[in-house]
Image (tube, rainbow, N blue to C red; front, side):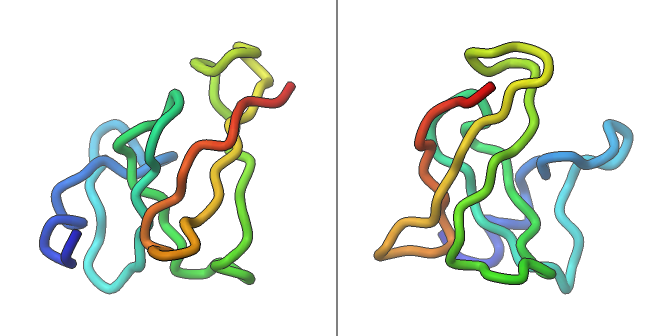
Length: 86
């Protein structure tokens, strides 16, 4: 996925009125699981190679649950779903 393609998705955690990506920010695409297809803003990530546990109500554990995503070893711009945790 090139930079232009990243500018057309919906960003995880963004306001519903303005869900698109912003110029000058870095994004990774979430692949699989309940957040599949969303973009994750990784601009200020302390360790962009580390995984993330993202709060979501649509995962296995419902409200209060989190979905775990980790960057692909071959493509850090894509984070693959690892599973859901309470």
